[in-house]
Image (tube, rainbow, N blue to C red):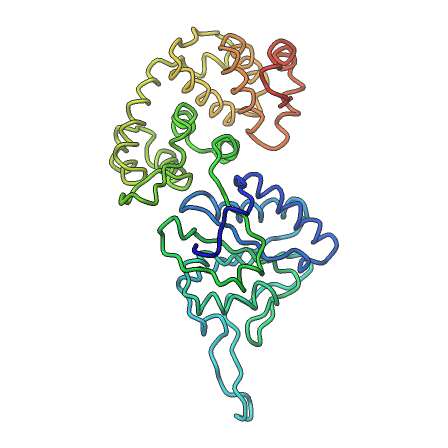
Length: 370
């Protein structure tokens, strides 16, 4: 962005950014000094997961601090400076002008609540609106209105190089923010996707074709392209409408582009070669597929089935026994995916004899994950 460079700021995936910021905010909340943490600015291409990161931070803070977290999402692109300051009106004796507080600043100030003011698309806002954000980010005020002490301020926006709607950020505003560039990372995304319940065909295809997770090209003219956000929408279509990729092909094309949708549709033919999940989890030990793409699909399907039956530990044990017949690296991927099913599920797996035996024989393939 001309004289404001982003090459000297840290690049973090969503998982890492959420972990670090949650830790920082948790400590500040415990010490009752949220204002100590500077306002954060998340940079990144469209769809990489900036908004998702804020929602994850809110969820983690609710768990770590045992407080309700309210997120106020303000799309600055749709605002002008007067919207942030409020509407002027006369005071009681009509001698002075007072400013009515905008609805976005009406926050719960109780000790049981944490507020997050999320200033999204700040880089797309005209400089006059960005200037109005000066006081919010540093002084936590706008005109006569002050943010409550229990409010966290996070901003996000696209980079100038993304060729989205974006204006140069004034240096005075940039220097008031803690800058982080959010980057795509498949392994971090997959751990989130498993816990979220992203459709198995999406996670399976992207496990096979990891660089398809993020296909944003700032120089291209295409309207539909693959990003973590658009793959989540594909999953929503498959989960909520039909998981028949052939039937949903036009909708998938409209989300990630025709070429990517064709690639996914072709890959999904491997599901015809997979054994029934019920046979695996009932301990019947069906034959293992031989083709690499089919094994990717098998691992994804087993993970999805395990997530749906996560409390049936005897059947989970049967699937772990079956996993010993998979190639070692795929078997290790499956165990990592199982551990991501929910928080604390690794501890549950450790109590299964079959998992302990697996760790003793193949644990070296986990690279320290267990």
